[in-house]
Amino acid sequence: MKNLDKTSYIIVTNPEPQPFYEVKEIIKTLREIHGVNPGLLIMSGSEVFDIISESCEIPVHHACIPLLNKPPSSLYEVEALTRTI
Image 1 (tube, one colour):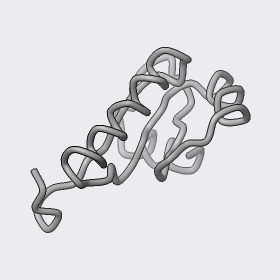
Image 2 (cartoon, helix red, strand yellow):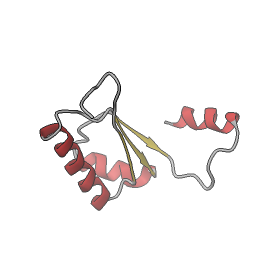
Image 3 (cartoon, one colour):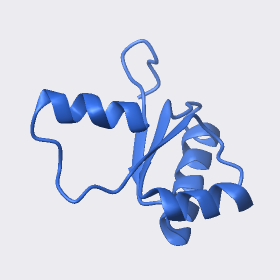
C-alpha cells in the first residue's frame, strides 16, 4: 500500500455533503495513518460540486465530471467527455 512506485489512490464519489465529508476523512486516514496522498478525487454532478467547492477546501487534485444520462459507449463519446472535464 505504501509503495508509491506501484500504488496510487483515486477516490470516486458524489459531490454531496455526506460523501464529501467521508472523502475528507478517508484522505486524512490515508495521510496520517498510511503516509500516502490520494492522486485524484473524481466527482460527478457539477451543480452540487460548485456549491461544495465554494464553501470547502478540496485537499487533493480533483475533477468534476458532469452527470450523464447514460455512460459513454464509443471512443468518440469518451473523447467528448474528456473535453468537459
